Figure 1 (cartoon, rainbow, N blue to C red):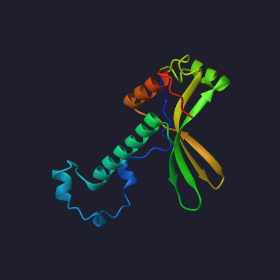
Figure 2: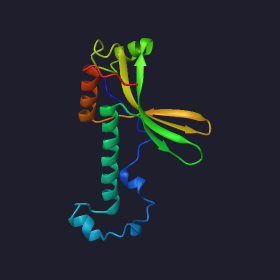
Figure 3: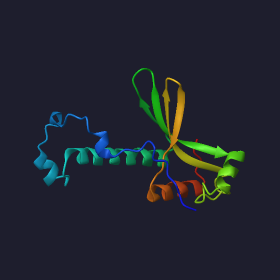
Length: 149
C-alpha cells in the first residue's frame, strides 16, 4: 500500500521568508557564506527556524508540554500531543496508524503531535508528521510507559 502524505498546507523555507527585510539584520552576505555556509539569507533564516522547530518538538516529546503561540486578535495556536483511545484507537491501530507503539505498554492509547489553531469560524487541527529519528524517540518514550496528556 502506497503512503500518501497531506501536502496541501506545505511550503518551502524560502517561501516563508520571502517578505522579510534582510537589511534590518545588518549582517553582510559574506558572513552568511563563509561562517554559516549558506548561499542566501532565506536559507540561513530557514536553518534557524528548522532548528527552533526541532527544539520545540523535542521539548514536547521529552517533557510532555504544550507549546502555545499567542497570536493577535485574541487568537492562539498550539502544538501538543493528542491522545487516541477506545474505539478510535482500535480503528486507527487496525489501519496501521500506531505500528511502532506497543499497545500493552501504552495502555491501549495512541499519541500523535497536532497543530491546533483557532480562526473566525472555530478551531482547526492539523497532524504534524515528524522524521524517523524523532518518531523513534517518541515511540520509545511511549513504549517505556510515558503517558502524554
